[in-house]
Image (cartoon, rainbow, N blue to C red; front, top):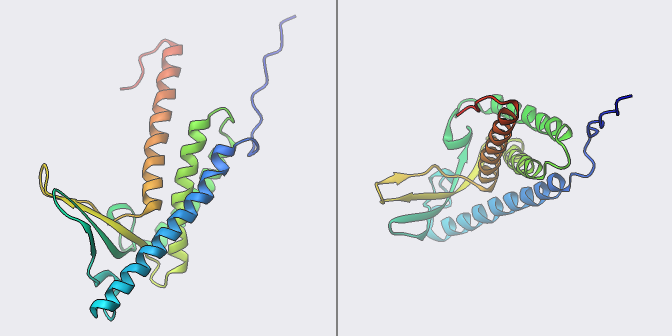
Length: 197
């Protein structure tokens, strides 16, 4: 009689600390940093007499300059990453909520041993919740962006303003892509077929 094959790992949320621990701390870091930066910039605007201007029109605060320039800004983004889809705020809010539900489904079906995958999913969730908080709380539904980098080397460039939540989403999404790409290559190798480039 053939030996029974080992059963698959049960689905669920238990034993996945690398998902459950990081995201609440990262959401707190995101919300605190947004609050601190915007409060600081409001104080600077009051000192310089620019406090009557809308947030997005207040002068930035220069942190350092040179080949790399870093400013704190108080910009509200009603779109998505890099300022895209500025007129689709409500649609984006719905999509973000659906993405959060999808993330929980993905986590439920991820093995406890897939620790790196659980960690990058935690990063993406933290970013989604941090930005959704702004969407639901701010009167204009905009997300607070305050980190702005530009430079003159090796050519003149200007990176769109972002926040901690955006960083979490970007790092998490890149990490998830690389992990899924690696898994696909490993499966292709075991199956004896050429992996996708």
